[in-house]
Length: 441
Image 1 (cartoon, rainbow, N blue to C red):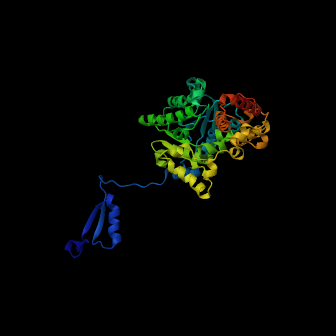
Image 2: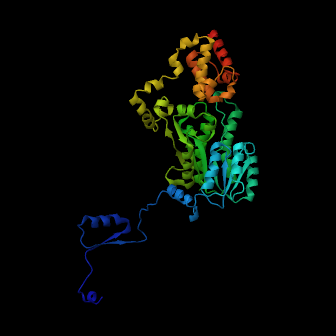
Image 3: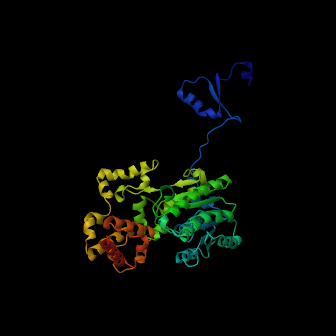
């Protein structure tokens, strides 16, 4: 200090003073080796700096795997409600939520008391420190939702909701009854409002929707309409300062309605996208974390894995400007293999026998062609498709019937309504009706 006071030594000059917001510039000066003097960084209240944080999704995953650290994705002192919890995805969410730290999980669903798979989950967590309940409830009914909320009052406050309730009544809009419309719309639209009104103070509200709300799908106008409603519902909650996220899902393999009804192969070829059950759980985790997870924009998320072009011909959504690049990518491998033309030609039955041959074919050939088609649509072994077996045994819903009707029109040049197919007792009756219409023409 004496030498400094006497002027024998002095601070190194010049001194370049930079605010904290220009730290990078200061380091570059030093790194360049051309700086003279010192670079000093100041920290003032007005300085703005960028903050880099690790992925919230990764942080949560690490926290939940180290439960002893005291942090987890879900709170042990809160209750979490899964609407549609008795379905495949809902049931998969129960052990997943418990793994993520939840101690109180409630499944709401119409089959809560009758579904053996739900009973198995309840038994799994008997005599543990976890409370799992299954409450019979149609979330689309205001009265039933109010009763369910009353039953939950002995549990900790509900802090999170996953809305996965669904009741499909697929049909062309022109054939749709009011009851069909009401069944689908009520579970998803009114169900969302009922959950919103019953549980006002939530950490998260995650709705599981379908990507067909964006891409569209023949025979699902009500379902796709309710999917677009859920986007508007997210915006509504955000405007109120409340959390909300909607996840638009493609067909899911392994869990859920599609997997349980053996429709995954058919939907892979008609929608061109798919996700695994484990991937859905990851998306739910990201939705719970919110925007910090980086997987959603404004609370809306669409995720899928593209089905190879060799498995499906070009789909309508591939003509949409923002989705066409994915369509080209899906078909790229097919083009390289020279397989695109084959995938666009249609059914294998169409290639092995011509339209005129089918129209004039005898009962055995017609029955064989019908059986081949039903086997291809339902992924049921060909040997199990018989002329006298009930069509209900094959799980022919409205979408499959619609596809079968189009195939009949294309190959036999006759019109047969979806109602005519669904009202047929078996394939023999369907074949008879086809023959009748061919004779009339």
